[in-house]
Image 1 (cartoon, rainbow, N blue to C red):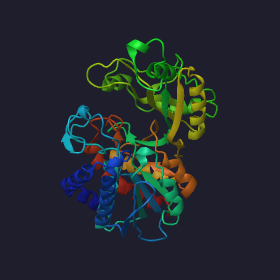
Image 2 (image 1 turned 135 degrees about the vertical axis):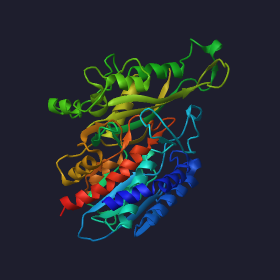
Image 3 (image 1 turned 90 degrees about the horizontal axis):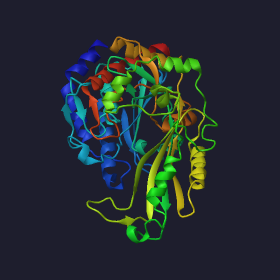
Image 4 (image 1 turned 45 degrees about the horizontal axis):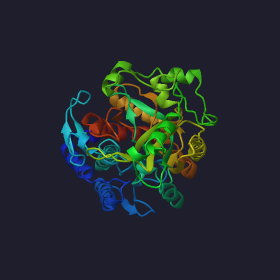
Length: 462
């Protein structure tokens, strides 16, 4: 292990330059204009795996964007770890809010990253975190330390709900056979407070369209006499929650698995400073479901948010128009026992029921994913705990995150494998936002920790 760490330290500068190459590729999965970039990013990952020492690596076609698969099989009798990650990224919009171009990575120091952080789209989510696994493999191969078999599955559709990956897993079950799936697409509480994510909320994502008149109208001639879709859509969205921030959709909470008092107590034992939280976001007060703490609101409670709303005239200057249509994208984060499509059906029924007769409403279910809770009493989790304790000098805190990785629950259903969510980012790293970044400390700490995971997992599974 000493030689592995020395190898990683000696090659830091080269690693950084290589990662920058990958980050420069605008692999935005939701934009068909970036189709060529998706293949370019996938092939970059394939080549990186081969250069790191994988026995083989291949780019597989799917109905959507390609999947990269690679493997290093040392001994069939040893346990097998499948590393999952994604090379696709979120759109960079709004571009004018970036301090530097999103696909031209630069290193800048911040209060939370005094040693510097990489600013680029995908730096943390998830290219930077996948890259740690490539380099861990390289260091282990270079030092002939291979206590387990390693497989890699890096997809290009995570940011759009992984629509093709379920079928890919079904079609390739034997190739993907493993003992555990290792995922670095989550965060730690702080750089001095390591943590392992043991739960993720699910997701049900819809787009709504509200139509009024058959064309845009003059707001002076028709205003006050014809229903305005933007006004009405805003009113309808407001009715989705009551004054206590409780979601009003009938049946929405019917399947919610309520956390016990003991679970709530343990969740709130994780270090959290509300004052620092508000300061980091530049807000005067938090806002959420009554009766729950901030950690509970994002970890064990479902939520509903409008992610975008548009319609009418939004250009420079004035245009007095009463629009024909208005649109919104709405996400609902789910907790154990809630099913995404069922929630979408409940949403559509209620949303249409609160629409006045002067408009027509259309609801499209875009994608979703099941919530996940992972056990903490298994060799798979213990290996992660031991690895992080070795490199951080502290035992990691089990915690739940509010985000979603839609495919994790399907892995268990299709491949029969549990996942370990051992990420190294920070919640403040602005993923999905302008100025996304990933600390150099976190990047190198991940590379340092991952080989220890393989070491301890190999020992625990003997």
